[in-house]
Length: 473
Image (cartoon, rainbow, N blue to C red):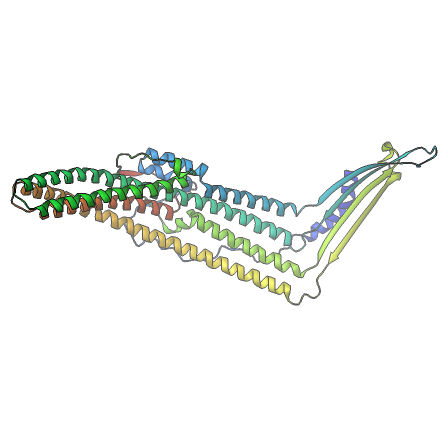
């Protein structure tokens, strides 16, 4: 029966296919955007690198040389729930594209049945009737409405894939930023623990000097105040650490109540980020790719709406058989066939179709504006992050000099106090200055690390070529 059904619908379908293929969508071109400059302004000395097609897939976090961070980043790809959402959205978009692709092809069905009947009374023998029917229907895509719908769905699926890639890069970057902030707190906590030892020693010395009558009780109160403030700051660091630890737990898809990161030695490593030419950013950033695919989808939708001005045609065919014995079911004498065609055209809709076309064009213009804004934002982020990384790098030498000088001054002042040549106020001032300078140095390194992560995100991910791994400077 299936063969006969194809014989019936084939000539008509072939004729309609000759008419199909006409698209009402405008010819698509990637929208023109801001013209990239030969190099980024923020850092003229930024080394340029030639990106490869797979650079955005690189494990860029390994550039920081931290095994714990490597393990956490691997978990993000598997258990992060935001990424699970985007993966499901991408799968849904692919399924929608397959549905729209199937609409271009004929729909074929079949049914079969058997009935038994006879007289309620008497000796009449029961009879059986066997039926089998095959059907086919097809809507030729004369004006490209179905093919443009399929193109729009495919472009939307590609945009969904770009959104997944962008969400992945964002989650990985957020994890790295939180991780470096937590390790910076660990370094500050270790430094403050050492400082607390010094403050407690100073308090004992001051109390002894007061007992000996060489200093007043004000010095004891000052030492006790300095120690209490430092202990409160230490608790505050612990509070902040819990917040970052909880944020990291959520990023790796774990309950913060059961997640813990043990303190680890401070690793002030900042990779030297090789550069890319500005035009490469357009090719590598997934958010730009996703915005461009939305423009393509909107362009195809214009064709869908314009096709509504033309008549729609439908073709149907059926082949059936009805027989008293299953062996006679497919005989020529018991077979019936039918072939039909229909056409429909809207004559008056009071401007509804024109309004839909205008709406589709406006939606296209909106996606073009979004695409261009995404490009501008990308260049802005690269310039800003380059300036930030360059600035933090330049500040590091000053912070390092300040920290070393402050530590030396603290030592000299403390010795002078023990010798009785300065008062305790000078000691507390020197201690506070030393702690602040060392904390600033740690924070500068964290700022360099987070700026490097932001720049990696801004250029679209990993790069090719050798990487310079060195301590912060």
